[in-house]
Image: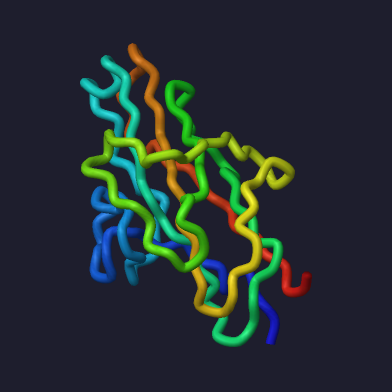
Length: 165
């Protein structure tokens, strides 16, 4: 059996039973898949003042027998608003480790370097994920000051892995 694209999944953080994307601020991997609604709508006050928020997710190889090789992640589609953008960073803790927890969505994780990772060529390299292994990824959304409020300011991450080295 080989790795299929459906074997690579993205989960919330915040503990095994967390189902709330707003609480996906690091900590243990959740059993809940992350959707495209990780961040709230951009309110008028956030748009006026500008805002930077963070979320933590995990990329997991759900295949029970095969490793995912040359695993990488990138921002396939950035936000539709011209006044916002997301960037991503690999968590420094490494594979199958619990990532740090930040106190609130406005607090940056310690020591992470964020990248636009705007296509596969610029993707962040996770490396090999053994069966059931996972890797933490931080997402940063920046709303520029004097922006317009925006509903459904979503984005799409893409994960790709090879079945052989």
